[in-house]
Image 1 (tube, helix red, strand yellow):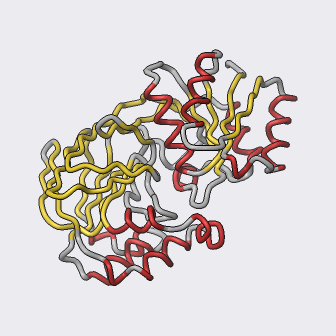
Image 2: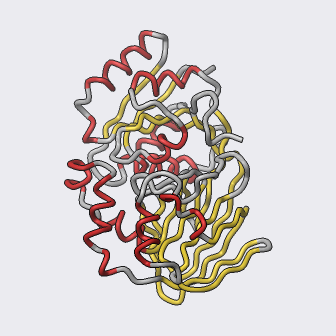
Length: 298
């Protein structure tokens, strides 16, 4: 095992003493563990390039789902094979880490480096990449417009509060979805495309998704469902608040979405706006440090 990694730490966590202690412990255990702290947009991508140039094949995301997405994007855009991602969950929701069972304690999260990393899928959307989930519709508007201050104060509950305060603004989006043996067209309130299971602070849109099966789980909430029931199901924790039957579902290796009006597709916090989205699964394109028996593995 190459005991060498670079940790890219979100700037808000620069003084996190638990992270510092965990890094020092890994170094005492013989790891060459370098640390870089982000200050502004683009830093994570630049640090990934630096890591690869210096011979690091393992990069650690110390932050939330947005940090994971930024680093995944940079790793995939590099075109280099056999790269490994590890995660210290330090964000508000930590949706990927929660679904995967990655420990919250930094020392325990870094201890996963001692295990063989699991080959996992990455989903490509047009020229972008994500590891966890892409969302569209009302849920996306809520997650992109929930303030950082509110998230810091309330954690994942901030998304629910924002959703309730904006309930009167709910209006459906319109789209056409096409994939192998799948076609759906109509108005929808929410959309989830999962390589993993949840987004937006615990919205389990794709509760049975696996991250290594070569498929994406598609969940569409049609607009003709009871509006209040649909929104409640969207933002409740658990298996969509018991509203599983509300969703149109498919499991595909590729999908095309066409919308008459430009729509935001939120890739783990990175909004991508277009009228056409081409999605495809890149099977086992990345290695991910996961605990033994992770629920996301087949």
